[in-house]
Amino acid sequence: MKHLQAWLFYGLYTTLTITIAVLVIIARVFGRNAAWQVGKLWGLTGNALLFVICGIRVKIEGQENIPDAPCVYAVKHQSTWETTTIPLALPPFAWILKKELMLIPFFGWALYTLGAIAINRSNPRDALKQVNNKGVAQIQSGRSVVIFPEGTRAAVGEAGQYKPGVILLAKKAKVPIVPVAHNAGLCWPKGTVIKHSGTITLRILPPISAEDVQTKKRNDVLQDIETRIETACRELGA
Image (cartoon, rainbow, N blue to C red; front, side):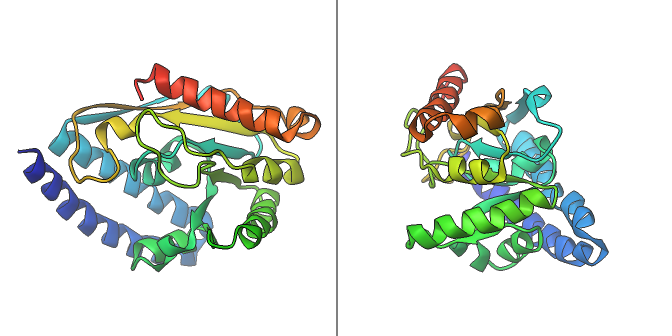
């Protein structure tokens, strides 16, 4: 039964993704904000399908912790879910994503249209340079930046290696870092098409101030980010 649910979900979700991606590209003609509003349909329709087909609800907590000005969001990476849903919870931002995603027809093209920053993970030095230069440019233009500090998806109960790029960008841009935790891997685990009924909770945590980012040791800030995110994930059951 769960396999049938999963394939029904993916069939409809793929069709919607292609449709919305085309609409995003068209809407970009009317400005980036217009494209962004259309792009949020990914999360809205995807979550609606998850609820109707798979019995998965979505809950967002901690939006009062969102700063009034642009910042860097450090987001836990457990599944595909967070990539398309976090635009529903956060003000307009630019993703930091591996360049391979940009090659996916329609989906990748729309991400590019929305201002996502593609990096080459096989060349860490070049990737870090792109994150800093393009990320700062996005922040200066009034948009926040979302980074998955682990770099790749981690299974439920596991923590990937948290990388310092998130700190270097925030330090260069002189902005706070907002950790974001969730338990999406419980319902939408990596490595399988199966979806499990339940509630996905996205929790936006209190920010690490720009002053702390500037004055504290890099490893201390990185450890603080990891501790906050992983502790919140455990509280959410993930």
